[in-house]
Length: 410
Image (cartoon, rainbow, N blue to C red):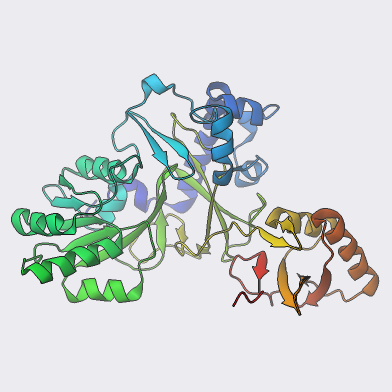
């Protein structure tokens, strides 16, 4: 396929949609029958009916933020796993703490496609500076590189002088890791008078790939690409040579939902990333990552036809304490649902030492009686009094924020 990892990347989008939803019912059945958690959550769900985006959107969301509590109640995976511990290859421990399973299949984390798009090829020597300690990132990229036929230097994080000497001695052509750590290693090479000229490409993730770092790498002849993934899902989306958003990985269904809900938002609107996988070992259905992004219209100029997202745009977890009570995005969603509104933004300010909360609602309505009814719902749902302000449809910022804390803390 030349520039493509395989033919799946260039297939007709409608064909991909048909193919992936033809498989979804069986994955829902597998999760329900083999996972204790989904056996409970999907009770009463008929898997053969889940064959469209609308049907998928009717299933409950499982939030990453809930995993620590779920796992404490049912060690080690909260009952979400469909494969027992004895059938796994590795078990990781991520911050939270959250246990993450790795199954035995090749390229378990779907990283090879991401690496291929960044220019990594068979025979490359690559320095892997993602962590190998407890968290899955090091294994995630090593298994993908091995699938491509690359030789891997398992650098991990830290020990910049040793890493710099490894670059000078082993002349790797590629780097995978965080962009900031690559910058540190290159600076250490300069400090020690060691050559890093062999490094020509980098796949970076784990933090924002800021323009100054991208430009610094380009000035040294290093072509950098970014990717988005999680310890639960593996690689979700990746940058291509088109530099036009991040292309969704194959064998995944991605939704963008209004934060705090499971309700899909219109294309282009910022919301929370929710992913459904076809992982047989860990069959995550409608897994809410807590990350914000938005879908880009159309397909990538590079020729890959899957959905594109803007990339990581912040966190969806916006719970805020007001007058001693936490308010949550799902509470905002409940108020909107009660009154039939589509979009709103809860703004928290402080006036003369007193918190003030205003629900700014997109609506053509300016009715005082309706405003009072919405204020009553705010008080009932959030247990805190708040005002209502009307805004023209489409006038609120498209940044994914449902709750904005505008108080001054200094």
